[in-house]
Image 1 (cartoon, helix red, strand yellow):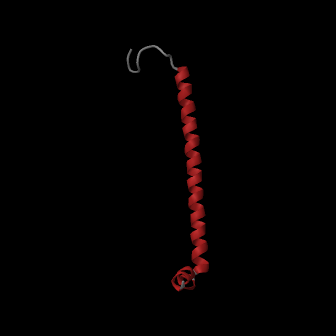
Image 2 (cartoon, rainbow, N blue to C red):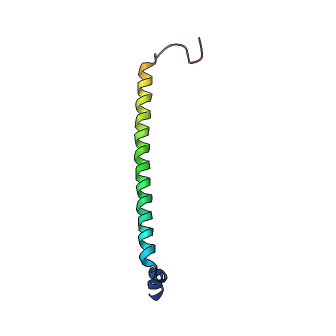
Image 3 (cartoon, rainbow, N blue to C red):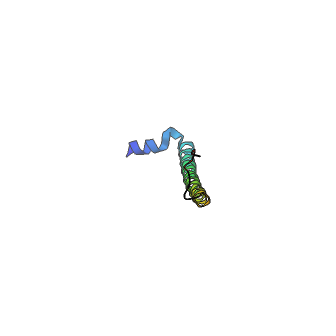
Length: 67
């Protein structure tokens, strides 16, 4: 038990170490959540643009690059 207690005390610097660790964890989780939301929004935008392009292009005709 003494080993765990001395580890958590961090040599007297626990008041600085643990809040810094907690803040870093919160910020990293926040960055992850924002990144996932942005990725989903970008995928939705890409899907919408692809659907719009499919509707705008003729279904039959020469392939791209052919005349």
